[in-house]
Length: 445
Ligand SMILES: [Zn+2]
Figure 1 (spheres, helix red, strand yellow):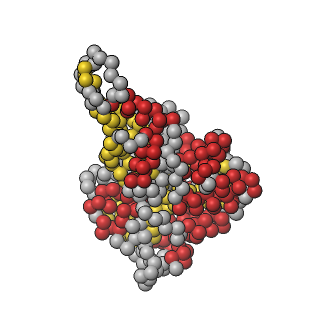
Figure 2 (cartoon, rainbow, N blue to C red):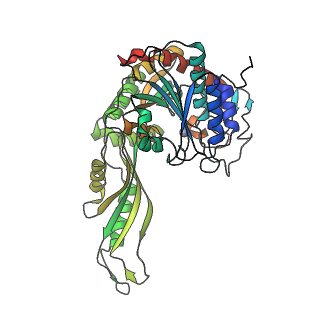
Figure 3 (cartoon, rainbow, N blue to C red):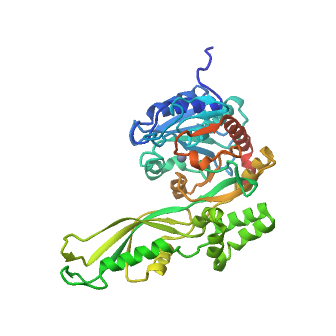
C-alpha cells in the first residue's frame, strides 16, 4: 500500500493551504480546493464540487451517518479558502511560505481562515479514519469568494443550490471561540450572531435656482446639516435579545463591580452615558447596542451656476441582529427628521431569531479544555458567510477554539502584515472540535 502523501494534522494542512496563493479576485481558488478534495478523498470521504465558475469552486465533503437519527441534523463546518491581498504590506516572512518559527505558523490566511479550515479538515480526516459511528452526517464545506462578495461562494450556493443545505440547522464557522484577555479575565467569545449590512440613500430636496442669488434652505444645506448630525450623534440605543444575552452572560462571568457595570449598559437611559465613560471598552460594546451608519458617498448638482433642487448621500448602515430595516430607518429619521427621502439600496437580512441551542454545549467544551477560561456569547460587529446561511434556516456559530497567548492580538493580525497563528492554538482547536463533533448530538435533544 502506498503511503498517503497528504498531511493529516491541522498544522501541516494549514501550512499546505497557505502555500496556495488564493488572493481573492486575483488568483482563483481552484488549485487549493482541488488539493483539499484529493486529500479528503484519499481517506475515502465523499466530495462534490458546486461552482458558478470552475476556477472558483466550492467543495462539499460529507461523512454519512451510521444508522441516522432523524432528530439530529447534520453537523456542518464551513470555511473560505480565499484570502485578502498582501499588496503594499511589509512582511517579515514570505506570506505564502507556510513557515513555522518559534512556535508560530506564518502566512496570509493563518487566522483568516486557513488555520481554522485546517482544524475542520483534521476533524474530517480523523472521523473518516477512526469511524466513531455517529448517527448524523458530518459536512465540511470549503468555499470561494468570502473576502469578495461571496457571489461565487456561499451566497451563490444559497441562492442557486438551496438543496445543498436541506436538513441542516447548525453550522460552525469563523470568528469566535478564541481566547481574549479583557479586564483581567480570559474570555472565549463564541459568536452567536452578527450585525446586518445595508446601504441607504438619503435624498434632500429644496428650491433650485440661479447661483448668482444667495439662496437659503437649499437641498445642499439640508443635506449637510443631516450629515453633520449623523456624524456627531449615535443612533438610538437598541437592545435586541442576542445582545442582551451576551451582556448578561458577560456580567455573570465578571461578577462584582465590573459585572454590575455591564448590566447597567442594558438600561437604555444609561447606556450612552456609560459607554462614554468606559473609553476603549465602551467602543467594544457600542456597535452592539446601536445601529450605526457612516456616510461614504455624496452626490448631486450638475452645473456650477445652478442650485440643485436635489442632492443625496449614500450610507453604509449596520443593523444590530434581529432589528428590521424599517426600525433602522426610524432611527435615522429620529436624528435627521422626516423631510428626507430614504431609499434602501441593499439589505442583507440576518436571521429573525438567534437559536442558542448549541451554545451551552460549546461553552462546556471550552471550559473542559481550558478550565481557566470563561466562554461568553458574542455578537460580531462585522459580517461573515454566516449571514447567507441564515437565509436557509441555518444558525451559524463562530466557533473555532484557540487558546492564545496573552500578548497575541487576533484582531490586529487579521488582514494585516505578518499574519500568524500559534501552532499550539491550531492543535488545541482541532482536538476540541473533534471531541465536540462526536458529542454534539447530545445538545440536540
Ligand atoms: Zn474570514
